[in-house]
Length: 369
Image (cartoon, rainbow, N blue to C red; front, side):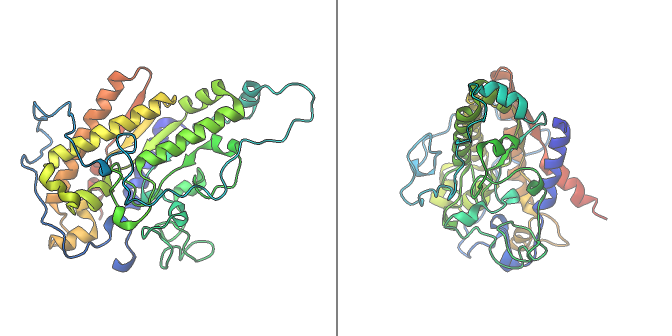
């Protein structure tokens, strides 16, 4: 499967997975109704248009000092208010049965013989493709009740924010709860966790979740186990030929900025907050690059102003989307695209694609008849 086809598949996955809504009491964490004390939304000081250039003094952006408990674990310690991460109950092991032959084991030869020639996908997502990760965590962001799963094989909730299976089920396994071997991870791994965000504190009111930075730490652990299993050279080759999909950031708005957690709106305008997120995203992408990741697809954010909750909150007439929210998302995607372009210039050998999910979703919404 070509890289372009994989990009198309996951773009459609993002577009068609998000609008699913069965009942207000069973919403995905990203569109769950907030409590009534939500502060008023602060509109961008400079409305975004597709022709608007970035402010001269804005890019590149150096984030201002921010509360330590909200930064990525690589920038500051974890907040004491965040529950400890729960490790997999049955982690992968690098133990393998000794070959019958008395000849010495050659990891490189083993890898060349057993590695699949196809492109392996590794996924860093939130609830869109969470296939049960949060079932292992103490969190409210858990699809463990009906009507979730009603069309699944067992007709019971499985942890997927869907009525049945999702496309990722047929591609790669989830990291948590996996009972296979290291070799099973050669085909790719799904690290997605509902409620995950770029900022560590995003979604903290939901309980435990595997943030973007923590998902990357899980991949680094995966990579180290690959090295122990098949050697460094073969592992480098496998990772550099794989495609890494990144779709993160929605919860940083829904469960952090719009709710004005820690008075963030007093510290950042929407434009500066977008740049703060992009700065953290850049850091994590460089971390992936340092462990031999070369091919990445960064998904833009969807039009969350078209989600049912915001249609209700902003008293939408005839299903019109909340432009106040979507304008902020458009700004975020503008900064994200700029960041991707910069990284392609800065990182030798990297091939990073930006996928415009918002435009695709809006085209579908406008031409749904």
